[in-house]
Image 1 (cartoon, rainbow, N blue to C red):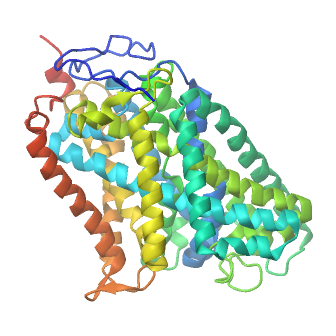
Image 2 (tube, rainbow, N blue to C red; image 1 turned 60 degrees about the vertical axis):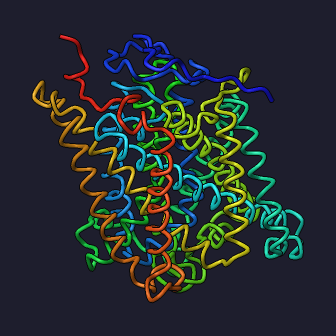
Length: 529
């Protein structure tokens, strides 16, 4: 289809005082450019739904409940709360930055404004590569649950076993990626309509699961069940620091993706305020869902390693597959399978939002080739960036699957490094960008300075600890390269690859890297005397 070039002339301050979404932002950065996206397409509820959907709560729970219980035992709910804290603190940073600079480049744009083009480029790269990894993983999970559900509905083990056929599995992944790409390509209105249904289904099924799990716990249906205790919410009761950090890494992964509603800020009503509020709403819904489900499941079956215990190594990587029938019964159990498939499919579709819009912003500011700055004339979406992300996802998953299942698993383990990398940089960017305003009021000090820095420090600590752990070949699949853990090689290698691409782009786009396109500045310096 025909594309249009959305980039304004260099130096043209196209962002109006009300922004693309009609918000009354005090615009202090004249070099921030409009991208040509469809404004006023999403409201508060729609934006929050996009954030929740990208996280994929049901998928995260089925794949992480068991692993977290295996690390910290009955303190699993406490670790969920502990993982929520740095995410909440970083969400405050996103909210404040979005109020000042409502730009779809989010982390990329904001870190450029705070720290300069090189740090900003690497932050954008961290977001992009993390998203590609997640997209490939989500497509694989959705495929597995598609064939598992098909087998359940037909009562055929042969159909369920098709997921084990590598050719069928890869083909199904490519079809799902193509469908998700097409929906995202058609714009935020199409995306929002699909997500309302899929997110509502997930939350309703979780409510039903929690209610039935509590009922089973009270009746003592399962021998491994345990009585609720408030001590479950005490993170200091975790038996060791190593176990706590391992559980915390898993917990942080469970919250990743809420920032998708920020990358849709230029398409959101009241673009300087609504996305930040939506992010906080999404975070509250997520932590509530995780705590309720974790507590209910633990009451019903316990966190042990035998029977239906959450930490049973035979079922811990897919808890809902093991608990669907025993807790919810036959028909409702199938509904839980549907919810996991819907969760992975919904997240697969919305996760295209941050990667496509980050690439669009990087291209608009000449940090990437100009062709990615084009938007579709009818749908007002970054068409080329969306299609490229879909192709990259399909190619990445296909190659990794054909090369080695171990490499694919280790790539997913390396994801945590990317998440902590760009979230921490964004949090620090907030405090540095607003450093001249921190003495204006107690609110500014806390929300623009203290909270973001604390969140950044916590994530930087997790980044460092993960980096150290990754060096050990036992981390991840257990494979190694020259005695070094393959997860470390992949994680650090992807960052080094990004640095190499940045050097190439510096030769092609010297103006951006000289700070002439998107300038490094603070609000105090940007406001005329």
